[in-house]
Length: 175
Image 1 (cartoon, rainbow, N blue to C red):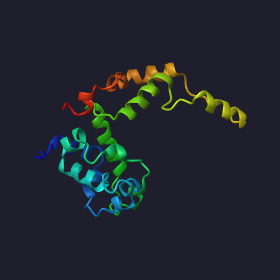
Image 2: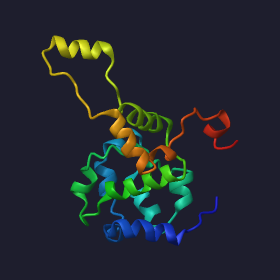
Image 3: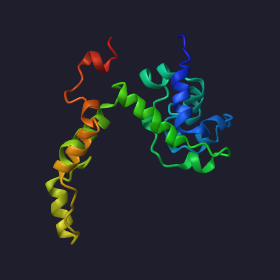
């Protein structure tokens, strides 16, 4: 597979967070990352940063190798980085680029649609609401979903989402 450097993409990521330039690939981030440990390296913060430094847009956005969506945003990598690279902020830039390219995982897309429609990502079920009442917890309140919907639509959030399930062809990457 041929990898192509996309200088505009590389400069875009560097423009959002200049700390990327300070990474010297020590892999301290990967060593502390709980997801890297659980996935036996399938998720690797160092490789994400390396691909960002090189401007490998196709690898990061289209192929999602490594898959940036595995990041828990726990900040452990940021806390231990000797160069103070803001890894999770850089990963957010990559995730935003994925969304703009229509490469959002189904689970995240579903949660985003839920936020658009109900105002919360994971609505409480009736049994959970009943249990909250039994435990004496306050009624769970959110902002008016119509206000949230209006706000999100005003910034074009709804245009980034898929409101229909992807076809098998889309899931397989067009194969």
